[in-house]
Length: 432
Image (tube, rainbow, N blue to C red; front, side, top):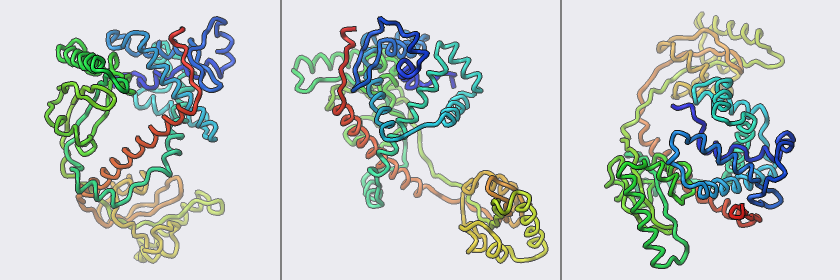
């Protein structure tokens, strides 16, 4: 994986620092102009320039992949406006992200890119990106994600009947395809001339891709009018069941790397690109069965006292006393205590990594030594293992996820349209 910050994050860099930081306020030049008014807030030319520059830095080795400067500025400004509105709504709703949570997020970004935090900071500096702005925009991404989760929490419900219906009408759990699109937009009530012009443009883009002058991702960034243009038109992996029925046969007919002919849709002409495909096979997992006894660490039973109690119970089990009887009497695990410590069948780390690591080192019938986790001291007896076919269970989970994702996308898109329509947004980009 390249040590590159995500494009979406690059677009967001420098969105709030100019307005919220006294230091940035001091260095802002008096001639800095306003490119957009968003309710009682503004987006400055310097902010837009920095956000655009961040994208240019990310694509320094692919200068031809980006659209002309004026088109790129419009795309970036649209994102900044929508982001500003979401951040404002999140804060008005009482959503907060602490400094420690931002620090953890920075550490996660560094780990995903196989870097230390210091190396990430150096990489940002080498790419001309400000570390404090990077943190500020990570915070905003987290605010927006929490806003999205809160908004959708009570609005997206999936019933078992809906899952059954989807499984009856579509193939779920089968092959998957990695898709991307390019959209050449048409206005409402487009004239025949406008329709023909849009079609010719889409056909021209397809020809450019097929000649190898640009790859599909670069062509999407440069030419697409879709909201995900700056993401290269990427739609991610989709099962054929999650593709609109009208497009399934078309997508099936395309080989990896191929691009469809221009397809007329509600918003204009689309080019569909099949990046790659993969098959889904039978899914089998190993499940474990065990008994468990927990001595919890509490204010009245600190770490050492809990350890001593666990060791005492362990000696009694080794001496021949019944594990189940001791678990019923002494275990602090409220889930398994009434059943004599029986944990049922479960995946290796279902009870946490501390339990999973010990369990993995035991043979069937073997009793563990007492071991500690963050909640207390444990004793485990591994009873057995089995191979379990979870294909059908995963199919139902996939179906549930398909329905949930579709509902979530529809609900949040509706929310964003409402958010934008209720806001006062004035673009002054053309006036520069």
